[in-house]
Length: 186
Image (tube, rainbow, N blue to C red):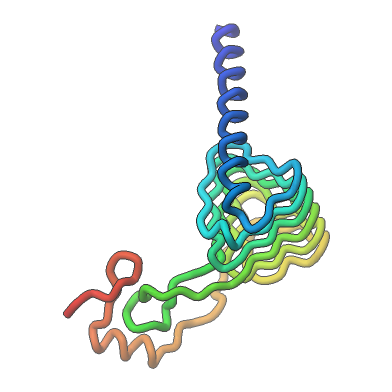
């Protein structure tokens, strides 16, 4: 049983190295910039690569999902755990249909140098994580995180409310969005 465990462990290490080499080669061609020693530690999905800048010695954990259309900067020596989600844009909930339309709002995400990001972290459009910060597992990051701050999971809170008149107007006119916010036809 121990032998089988060792074989599977070594296979996983080889598999991850092959995935890293493939992704590094693929993203080196499409990212806006990629520094030295960048490491993809498993499978990850990246869109909007042409708007993403990654400095030296950045490690991105397995199963990352990164939407870079709105711009993303990741500073040197930043390391992330698995299941990282970064969004740099969001659907427009003040558009022409409900619950949102097919247009987007773009906001750059900045992650400064020497940041450690834990497992299952979600980073929302417009977030700015200061130098040396630590983002604990399970956090949802929005707004500014001060340099050297240690952020832990907190209960959810209301950030703001939709424009009530706009919402009621769209509801009254039965303006709804289908897949990806594309307006449904009457």
